[in-house]
Image (cartoon, rainbow, N blue to C red):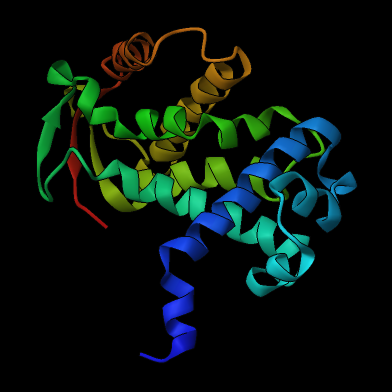
Length: 201
């Protein structure tokens, strides 16, 4: 491993990048994405410009990495409570089945960016698309009474419905606790899904 590779994975490097990301999130909320400059970011994070350019080419590079890592984290969070091939009956659904909700809440500082118009580019479309991708790639659904439906439509309908609930939860500043919110989702899920099988990634 050469010196350059050691640099890319060092905890210090990651910590520096996290500082830039959290300053960036804060500044987007304060003044809107388009108004934020690299100078603003380095001043807020208390680093110099040269340190910023070691990690990122520009603001766009930082924005793209931030979005990609958070949405990838969302995808990866889903499978934690499951083992591949496991079938869960919605009548027995419980809070751990919704690790995705915990992930969103844990990273609420980032996901709150969806409340803003002039926000991280790609978030408004990328967030719901990621939930749909999770439904399409990681799960097999069984409808109540095995009612035959167009499964592609069904997954779109349920994914965007779930996204709508999450969006509302974020926009109301996480008014319900995680447990209350998950219970609402479970109650709704039981009305149209009989069982969910986790197939993994």
